Length: 204
Ligand SMILES: Cc1cc2nc3c(=O)[nH]c(=O)nc-3n(C[C@H](O)[C@H](O)[C@H](O)COP(=O)(O)OP(=O)(O)OC[C@H]3O[C@@H](n4cnc5c(N)ncnc54)[C@H](O)[C@@H]3O)c2cc1C
Image (cartoon, rainbow, N blue to C red):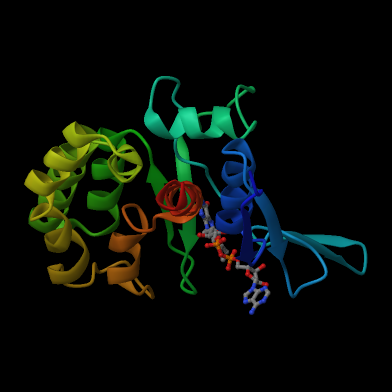
């Protein structure tokens, strides 16, 4: 039988995942990259003795048993030691106010209310929406879990509320709406890996 081959444009995480899944499914895969190194957005470079780590801040899907974790296992990225940090990310405004995205939602709510007490009703609604989303896994939904797809369809009205309709928070010197969006946005690397896998699945 003739070997089937697939050309993949771009050696970002999505293209590399597609290449791996293609080979796992017996296809001959060639990844074409216009840069001098693979990785796309997810790369680092050195200049004058400094390393600039373009990304990443965090990787979703590190919890054993989830559909995304299984993808990391298939791609050879797991198992390995994983650090689950207390703080997801931090933003410092030009005025010097520091906003920390705590992974503990009680702490996050208290911190946000301390930064912007006048936004308490909005913050309450936002954290309530986050709690709703913690019951479902957006990446598992993308990877094919019907339970998570159904759950997210139910939870979806809360998402636009927190990201689009919220007025900017009053953190001094900040773009408040971006801060509100920060902790829920972005399909990121798991999304790319799932799409790479799904693209190959559609061919085979
Ligand atoms: C600062 C920053 C922080 C981030 N933090 C996180 C994080 O914490 N967690 C997370 O999950 N995600 C994070 N992301 C997002 C994540 O890095 C990206 O979603 C992911 O790397 C995108 O992968 P991709 O393969 O879809 O695309 P890309 O990484 O854009 O890869 C596309 C590749 O295709 C190549 N290419 C394009 N056109 C051609 C062509 N015509 N011919 C040949 N090659 C071509 C490009 O050179 C590139 O290498 C972050 C992104 C940034 C920028």
